[in-house]
Every structure is written in structure tokens, then in C-alpha cells.
Image 1: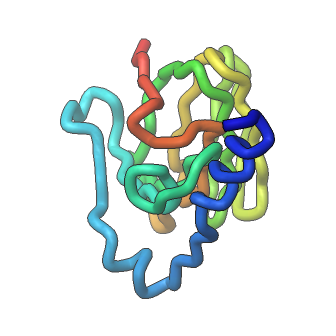
Image 2 (image 1 turned 180 degrees about the vertical axis):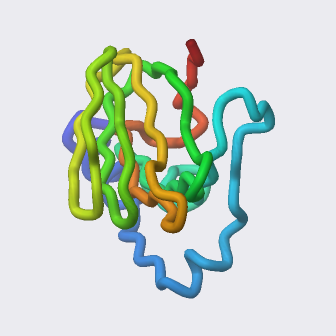
Length: 143
């Protein structure tokens, strides 16, 4: 098979993904089994093992009001956060920044980062995105 034919066949086999709010709400909520990593939950929305997609992994994460946080960690892949609700503090390589609904954060690959909710009444919620085919490729290395 020629290189061009291989590229065309790979492109054709990947289908668009549209998730309704109802289907997202039916997804299981995930969390780290070790609570020393923080108090955070997420739903992985786009990931090759679930959606037959490639190149991007996307999900929704929540740090609950009061004590929610995702502790300092690193992973090889760069990551984007788009804050969709609440307010908090994101720390990247020791530098703290306040974030609230509407904020976008770019985290370079291997940068140490964390995020925590700053409200006692409103959860901190964000959409995350990795340049990876599958969430299983992300190897969290906690500090």
C-alpha cells in the first residue's frame, strides 16, 4: 500500500463524535483510587478506546467546593484547561494564577501543575484536553 493510500485509509476509519448532554451525564464518574492525589473527579469524553477517535483526549473535571484539588503532578503531554464553572488557583512550575469561568490555561508537557477550588459554595469545573489518542496514555507522576 502506498503512503498516500495508507493515510487515506486511516483518515476514513476515524469517524466524527457528537456527544449529547444526556450521554455525557450517563457516563461513569472517575477518580484516582489514591486520595492522596487530591479530591477530583472526571468524565473522559473523547478517547480512542471509547469513541474511536484519535489525536485528542478530552474530558470534564470537577474539584468540589470546600476542599477539592488535584495535587502537584506531571505528565509528558501538554494539556489545556478551559474553566467552565467556579473559581480556583492553578499552579504551574511554582507560579500561582487565579482562574474563573471562561479562563483558558495551557500547561506545557512535563510542567509540574495543580489546581484547587477556592469556593466554599461552588465547584470548580473545567474541560481538559491532551494531544493523545487515549486517556490511558497519560501517565500521572505525582510530586
